[in-house]
Length: 436
Image 1 (cartoon, rainbow, N blue to C red):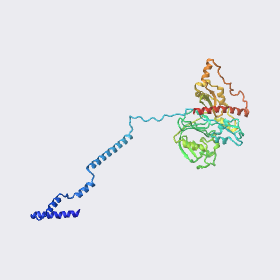
Image 2: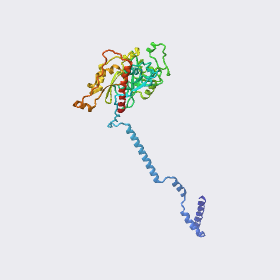
Image 3: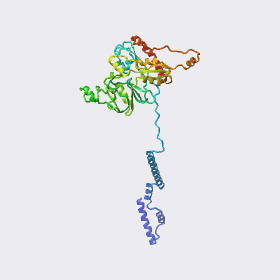
Image 4: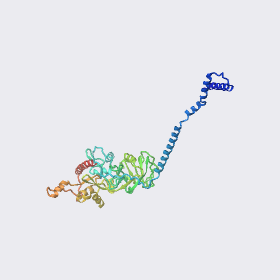
C-alpha cells in the first residue's frame, strides 16, 4: 500500500511540473492516471479501520438505552426492598394456624405377658416401657419378684388422658407418666417417669424448658452433701452420672427432666424432686422437646374418658398408697373424694345420672392403674322399643359394691377377675382401632 502511495505521489509531482511548464510531451496515459489519482481517497484505510473498531451509532444508542433500562430496574428493586421492610399499617398480620388438640380420651392399647420362671416386675416394666408401680397395681394378685411361670401378667399400656390442655408436655404425678403432644391433633407419645420421694415432692404447676444439655454434669446440692458427705462436688458425664446422658432444665430452679443410672427407679418415688426417665426414653424426649416448650405438671389419681360408646374410669394409687406399697407391699385402700366424683361426672356429661356408681366406686377402690369399663351407652333401637313397651328392657346383672367386710380373695379368684377385665380391655382395643 505504501509503494502504491509513493508512486502516485511521484506521478502527481511529474504531472504538476509538466502542467506548470506547459509541455505537451506527457503521454495521453498520464491524463488517465491524473484522473485516477484525483479520485483516490487519501487516508480512507485508517478511517475504515476506525469505523470497524467503533460501534455504529445505532448500537451506541441501543447500549445507552439498555443501561438506562437496567438502572431503572435496579431502582425498582431498591424501592421494592424498602417497601417490603416498612410494614403497611393498613395490612393485617397473617393469622397463625389454629391449634387442633387431640380429640380422643385415651392413648395406647392393653397387652398381656405370659411370665417365665425368672421374670421380675422391675425387668418386665422396662421391657414394656411402663413403671414398676403401674405394673404392681395392675397385677395385685402376683408376687412382683416371682410372678410364677405361666402366669398372665397384665401390661397397662392403655391410658386415659389427664384433665389438662393437650399440648406440649403434660406430666401426671399420680400415675407417674409423661405425655408429649408432639403433633397437634395426633395421639401423644407417653413415657413412665420417676418422681420425688416423701418430703422432696415434685412440684405441681406450669413451667417451661429453659435449657438442655447432652452429657450434663451433676452437682449435688448442699442438702445432698450434708446427708452424704462422701458425695463429690461434681460428677462428670459418664455411666455413673445420676443425671444419665441427657438433661432438660425446668424453669423451677434445681428441677430437671433427666435420664438415670438407676433404671429400676422409674415408676417409683425415689428422686429428690427431679423427673427421671429410662435411658432409652430420655434420648427420645430430648430430641422432641425444644427449649421454650411448656411443661404442665398435674396430680390426678382418678381419670375418666370415653372409648366409643363405652365409659371408662382409671384410678392410680395416690402418693400415700404408693409409699405403702413400697414399704410393706400393702395394696391400695379405698379412697373416693368429691373431686374424683366431680371429674367423673364432668366427663360422663349427659350420662352421669345413668352411671352405676357401685361399679364406679369399685374401680376407684381397686386402683388398678388402667381403664375399667363402668358404663355403656344403650342401643338406641332397643331403648326406644323398651320405652314403648314392645320388649322388656334389658338389665345387666347386679354388680357388687365394695364389700361390707374385708374378705380376702384367693389368688385364683383375683386371677379370674383379671381375666374378666382382660376381656373388657380387648373391647377397648377394638374400639381404639376403629376410632383412631
